[in-house]
Length: 101
Ligand SMILES: [Zn+2]
Image 1 (cartoon, rainbow, N blue to C red):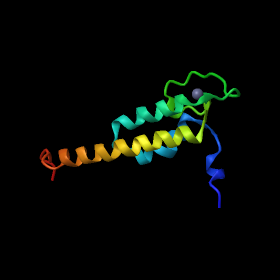
Image 2: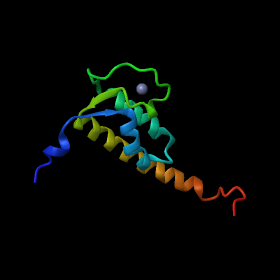
Image 3: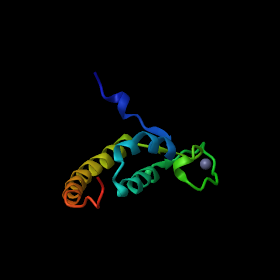
Image 4: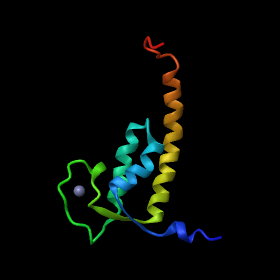
């Protein structure tokens, strides 16, 4: 079994990347921005045309070429950061019920 199949560059729109990964990142406000930054690191796909979508999260037209190594580096950063945020979030969540029952 090789990991080759998983290590191909992928051509993705931000929408595709967002749809795929955002569910894993929900609750982390910083993560959506990081996700967009990751996408912007990728080289623009020469075949995609410029468009005027206002929200990159819903744009399927512009694609970028994402290299596995870029993704792996990014994911590791997210995991490191998320672990820290989770700890902080848990700590903050304890005393603040704000009258909810
Ligand atoms: Zn578009």
